[in-house]
Image (tube, rainbow, N blue to C red; front, top):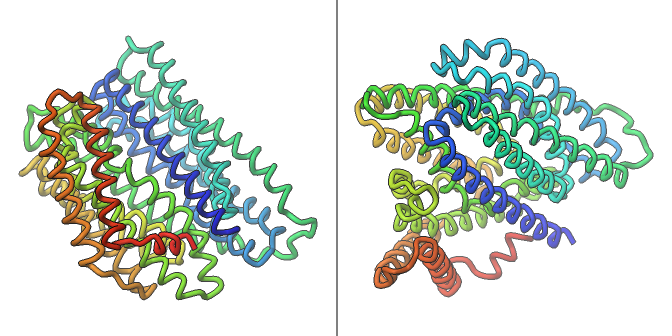
Length: 505
């Protein structure tokens, strides 16, 4: 029953994430065509401040709720779930209101002195209204993940995305002739309205689900849930906050230092192409891996609580292997036809070049994301905090010293170094604490060689069909590449059918 539930949840989370990312990319394409790369750059600049403020609002509470609810359910203490949620919502809302007040009060200072763009003031004030809703919904998401019920969270996310897109499209059509400041604010109004509706939906779904599981027996004692929430959430929050603060500083510094390299370039447009266009496409295929990472947090917590160390070891080994094998084929696809994808989606050779240039670090990005989630499930949030802060501090130093000399190529080099550093640290830590063993030749070198051989040969074969449209070419290329690569992996038993089944178990 539990195995079937995990498969069902993984499938739902994967399909939903694919749908959301597809909707997001289509929306970004429409947005870039409507407001231009400069508008996307301004949006990403303001959004970096939003990420910093939302880190305060969420406060790592979602992970804390997931772990504590999972622990109590493993002990059949369902009556203690409500006190956990109440304390989590109280902590999260308290921080969210403080964050909102600070953002509103200092919005002009942030826009003028930090972002150096007065057009951001209106958007920052709108963003402040989003934070309380974001705080509450993050608690409910953590609850549903612990309950192994992803449908409420995913359905509300789909609903939220639809509301966001519809609201933004209507507002931009209404204010299209206005300044970029008003248009950018319209986008964030859509975010606020969507988050408010999402929070309401999740609350109603939570009440319905809670009535099914909470027994009549009242939780006899507090069990120190407040302290436990703080213990789990504080290092995660501190790590995310410092990381977000440093990343915000980095996002502010990147356009400035790109201008030092070439004063004639539109640095805000370049910044928008990297953060708002290229990276969402590169992360699009990682949907299944992110779903597994999210669902494994309560599973790892339960395995630790029951001292099932062998299960943790085997799961880590198989997840790392699966992540490596899956990510390598997508890295090869982006490397070989990245320029065609950029032209098809954004009609931009520059975005296509970025997809090609960043393709080799796709496996590092995917692996780092998955390992980070599993580490948090294994009570290693302090380590991930240190890693993320160190990485961000180094990135800022490199942005200031490297970008003025090497421009965009310098920024690509910084991304290579950063992803290599965090990936090796997180993977190394996960292997160390779990005792997992990874076969580099079987899990990395052979799949890597196969992925690039298949995609390179296919590109040569399809070059004979010059009359194919861009969309048909990319669909054929991706479909044939994935099928051939999958057949290779199964034929040579890089990953066997039995291993796939054991991952689920």
